Length: 192
View 1: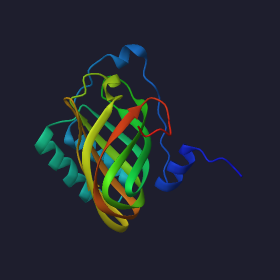
View 2: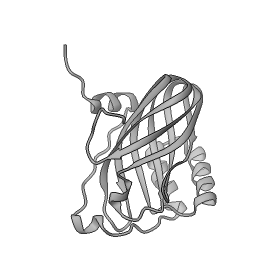
View 3: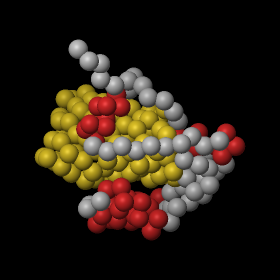
């Protein structure tokens, strides 16, 4: 029997590949500068492709509520649930002045939720004091209702930092759950 890595599973479900570089230590201490909405929409158009209208609306709605993000993450993730669930993802966090950095996320959920999905994900990051401040847990509520494919966004918070994942993916999912995402610099199977 062949052992399958987490990377192969996520890459297979999300059907995309993203690479990244770790910034030098001096860049990690700098507070990332903010991105304009147009820059985010352009990056999202390149990443998501044909769902550009939904992306623009999600970025606009997030901007009205939280202002301009000072970082964003482009990546892929896979999740599944039957009452209890788990989500695993990986991507690159982009900043204007503090460098780009590979990040991984994983987390448990619980709720009235069933199904599985693989997504391309763009996460807008607000109030990030330094690049290393993303390595923590962010809690939130998530809901899904789609068959074959879907698009949506939610918000996760941890202290003053707010993450807004915008997801587009394939699968079948129905429900609502409470959970968190834990960000790490290295891949791990432990969602806690």
